[in-house]
Structures are given as structure tokens and as C-alpha cells.
Image (cartoon, rainbow, N blue to C red; front, side, top):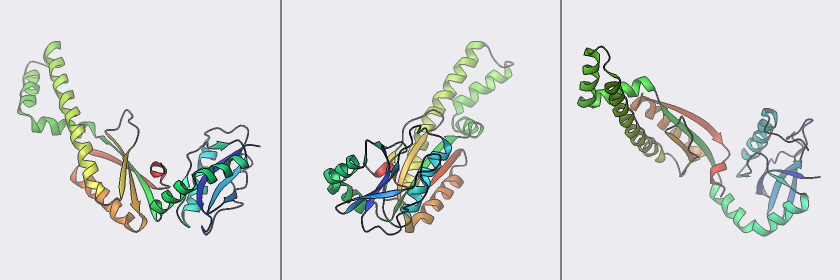
Length: 238
């Protein structure tokens, strides 16, 4: 039977969630595979594994339970190995690198920050900052909305100004939060967000990081900022 892998921890890790329910229906019990100084948190893999909410939550809950007791290298959902022996072989082959990352991540959690513009607020802002855009907008208003060409010209100018503002705000967000974090990574680019950033934060500084996010929201009310965390440090396991 194939083996589902949740994460990797030190053999001395306290409170590993053995026998906890994992992925599958019914949930497969979590167990450990030990090799040298390391253990892998695993369970039997269900044959019909899909990214269903139940299994996604089970994966996350196992890692959250394990992470409460010490550093864990989290696998992303869907990590399946041919069998237990293949997992043990990976621990033996890459053990030194895994231990190095566990040391680096001890006491750390991840926060994911996604940010977008409040469309109306940023529109008012770019108009307030540009006399040229205000003049074009006023001319169109006085002309009953303006011709198609005039509307197109104004729309293009506003879109370019908003795009420049997005680049500026992405830098603003990064600089505002990096002081409360130990490391940062850029997440995958996606439509709808001007920033998708992952921050590695010391557990003891988590309140400081959240306070920095709140301060950013007050400083830049034209931004819509979403915070996800604390999470296992998925983006920093290499």
C-alpha cells in the first residue's frame, strides 16, 4: 500500500500525533517512521485521494498538532510515496539537509499576506495625486461624458496610474512587514492580488507581526489586506 507523508520531524520531537485521524474516509491513523535522528509522519494513503475539504483539513490538522510541539518540515497536500521503505530511504539520503532545515525553522511559523486595492479608494487616490487626470476627467464631465476617444484616453491613463500604484504598494507592504519577520518569500503571482507574500515569523514575535499588519491597514486604507496564519512554514522548507 502506498504511504501518505505529512511531514518530517526530529526523533526527539515531543507530542507527535500518532493515532490521530489523517486523510481518507474513514480517516487513516497517523503513525511514524524512524530513521536515524528523524521521523516521518505518515499514514496509509487512500486510493481515491483528492483535494477535498475533509482531507485538506485533516492534513493541516496533523501538521498543526505536530507543530505545536516543535519544528516540523511540512509536506504539501498530496505527498504520496510508493511505500514505507521509500520514505525511510529518503530520510537516510537527505537526513543532513532535513536536520539543517529543522534547526532553521525551530520556533517559527508562516504568515501569508495577500493584498489588493479597494477600487474606489485607489481611483480617488490617483485622481487626487494627478492634476492631469483631474483635468481630463473634468473636461469629459463638462462634455457630457466625452467622446469615445476621450473616454478611452482617460481610461488608459487611469489604468496606467493604478498599475504604477500597485507596484509602489507592493514595495510598501513588504517594507512595512519585513521588520517583524525573520525571512520572506514571494508567493505565486495570481490575478486579483497586487502582492502575495509569505513571512517566516518567530512564534514569540507573532503579536508584533499582526500589529504591523494592523498598522499597515491604518496607514494605507486603500489596501485590502488578508492574513492567513499562523501556518506551518510551507514556503521555507526548501
